[in-house]
Each structure stands twice: as C-alpha cells, then as structure tokens.
Length: 287
Image (cartoon, rainbow, N blue to C red; front, side, top):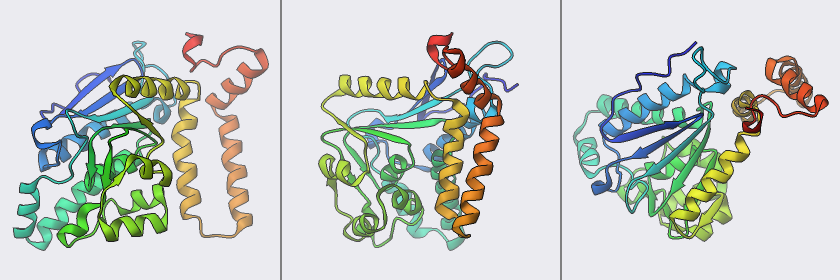
C-alpha cells in the first residue's frame, strides 16, 4: 500500500488533507498568486504526490492502516485573486533566456497543467478575482469550476505578443474551438456571466460562504460515485477525444471498456449493492 505520510515540503503552496479530500491553496497573496518557477515546481510535486494516493488509481478506499486514500482535490488562491498568471520577473527572464531554457520552462508548465488535467481525483477550482494566462489554464484543467460573480478570466498572452500554446489544449477542450480562438486573439477579460455561458465555469456565487457551500455540495455528489469510475471517466473521455478509427471500432472499444468495468471489484460492488438494496462501500453513509 502507499504511504500517506511525508508530503512534499512547500513554501508557496499549502496542502490540507481531510479524510478523502485534499485542498491546495496558492500562497503568493502579495503577488496575486502569480506563477514563478518555485510555485510551478511545488505544484507539480504536490499533484504527483496526491495522484499516487488516489483511491481511483489504486482501486482501494483505505491503506493498510485504515487511512483514506484521496478522492477529491480542491485548488484555490489566497487573497483577492485566484492567479494572475506568470510573475513579471518570470516573463522578464523568458525574454533573456535561450531557446533551450525557454523550452525547459515550457516543459515545466506542461507538466503542471497535464498533471492537473489528468489527475485521478475529481478536481474542483474555487476561483475569485482574476484568473489570467496560466491562471485560466489551471481552471480549464479542473473537472468543476466554482467562481465568484466578480471573476475576470483572460487568455492574456497575446498582449505580450505570444500565444497560450501550453494551456491551449486544455482551454480548447473546455470551451471549444471558436471560443478558444476568439479568447486567444482578443486576449481580453471576460466576466462571470460570459464565463458561465461558454462553459469556462460551472457555477457562480456571491460570496465566500456560498463558495464553501457549493464546493461541499459537489464533493458530496462525487462521493456517491465509485472512485475508479471517476478516474476512468477521464480515460474514457480522452479516448473519445483522440479516436480516429471507424465508428464500429469505437463501439467495440466501448463494449470492451464496459465489460472491464462490470467485472472490476468496484463494478461488482456497485451491482451487488444495488441488488441488495444497500449503500455501496464507497458511499459515506455506508461507513
């Protein structure tokens, strides 16, 4: 079994674990939680550490000591703003870096965004203030986004003569081709109403108390579903995204996928609990 102890040591990211839930908070409040190399590195390490402790990835609810493995991950930002994108010093350094150094920086960012997008837990962004550039990339990578009504989101890179290429695949998947192209070209800020309309966020709230309530509500909903089903839903979606063979081959693939799930420990538990008219072992009320 995986040891739940010894999480990565961090200065700019806080990690709180309670039961099967974990909460990451960006902690550069004085810089509007803007990215620097240290913050990106710390996020990468925490995402990897929590992914290795996911109930869905491990096909187990608890470790050998009865400690719960992780099923949900919430990411938020300290202070007035969620994340203002890249730190000004990081952007200044990029202008002086060699092509190889800029490639290494981009690879670090790619590791961050892909680590969040492919994380085996159900991921939730709780967003206030601005989410610019890489901040918009973070929320695009999450499974569910709850934002304050005053949210401002922008793919702001074109203002600097560059483009949101590293975050692009994730924003594209979230809002679609036409919206991604428009947001990348204009680089302007959109408000909460438009973010909700185009699918950048799932829910708008008025204040912090409503935010907490909505986060708790979606977590409660997720905990009624099988953790492996949550994790494998991401694999299923990715296969749909990139499938290039015939329709018949896709249908056959889904038949095999369904058969595998039904035969799994979780699938058998779900079917048995339904027939026995009891709660499945992953539901909180079964404990």
